[in-house]
Length: 317
Image 1 (spheres, rainbow, N blue to C red):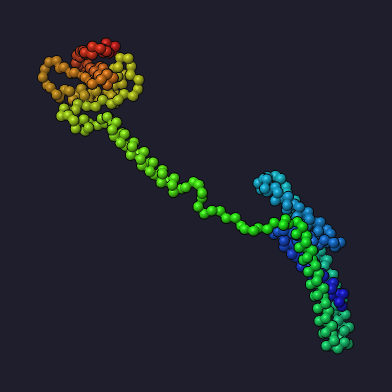
Image 2 (image 1 turned 90 degrees about the vertical axis):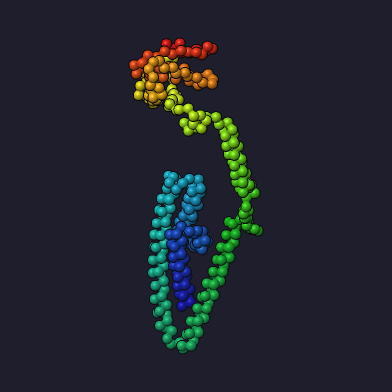
């Protein structure tokens, strides 16, 4: 009975071991701890070999994952090999479990047959013998487990480097450089000073007139109109009202012509003088186009260029 119970416990141990191996394999966990438990037994050499191949494939997959993505062909090939190896291990484990269950059932039947023969032994002696046997068996398995644990610790110590972490590193809370508060403050101050200097400079250098209201602040003369700046290339004749009669600048000269008609209704010739402070402000351009738009209304126009130094109206005649 002791031999049969020892075998039954061994079968239960094997079944539990296979169950744990199947669970760890399905979760792709570290199965190296089971290789030592299965080593040295002839009936588990195939499973040990399969588990060793699985462990090698897992390590190879982890190495490939550090060098390539999961969509690479090499990673997919390793993954297919892993799946095939898992199916082979699960099938082998299932067959081994069926085999051990059948052996355990056979031993249980043998144990029942032997226990029937013990009916002639007094009850107390049989109970004592049963407890003694259980104690002995448990003691043997406990010693076996301690031995396996010691062997596993020695094996693991041989693979793991003897590194000891004395103190975990920790990053400094505030960075040494750059100083964020100082940089933000300096940028704000520099931006404020630069903006203030730019405003003062533009205010001191501002010498442009942008509207009629600004002109009206310094003179009481009547405003006849505004001629916009012509941004395109001006022809040699400088006459634009005949080439673009519907343009904005032509309409501006026509507006000035209309306003000039309301200044004086006296009959006879009218004299209009165009002048400016410096050269290049548009005296010739405005004179030619104003004369042209007045001439288009059916009136006779004569242009007199009184610039003795650089006369230009002769180019447009």
